[in-house]
Length: 194
Figure 1 (cartoon, rainbow, N blue to C red):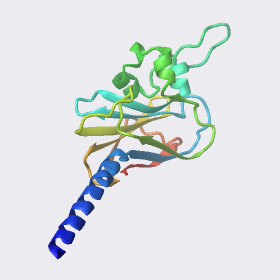
Figure 2 (cartoon, helix red, strand yellow):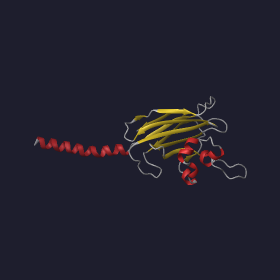
Figure 3 (cartoon, rainbow, N blue to C red):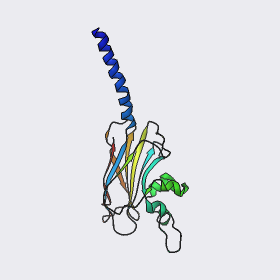
Figure 4 (cartoon, helix red, strand yellow):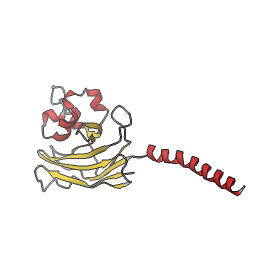
């Protein structure tokens, strides 16, 4: 009798654990954050945050600043996309995302206002692609690119796997051209698997 009760208790515990395991995987996410300090003058304050697969293809853009994709109208002229007016505007994201081939609607879906306030900016990826479908298991890269000032550009990159343990992802940075005056625009960049 005790063996039967013990076996039933173990079986019940196993059945309860299965949905819990599914929930933890379902709820997995990647959080990207950094300290943003608004810079004075034109040619700055543009950034993009995106995810690439192992082939280097953009899976999803989490955010890109409005000027980059929508630009600004000058006089009687219609607005041109910011990266056309200013080719140094987050050029790695523009190339990787194939922005020139995207419709205005596709770009609008990932565009947000160019920040007017300094502070911590946070973005979350739910392991879904741009169409809202769950991505296949594998290796991915998170990228944060900031145009500090005209052609001074910095990219932070971190590699992770979908089944990685929760915790911080190691990021590396690559600076295109130093700019002492604007180097504090994006600092304390972090990526964390949740």
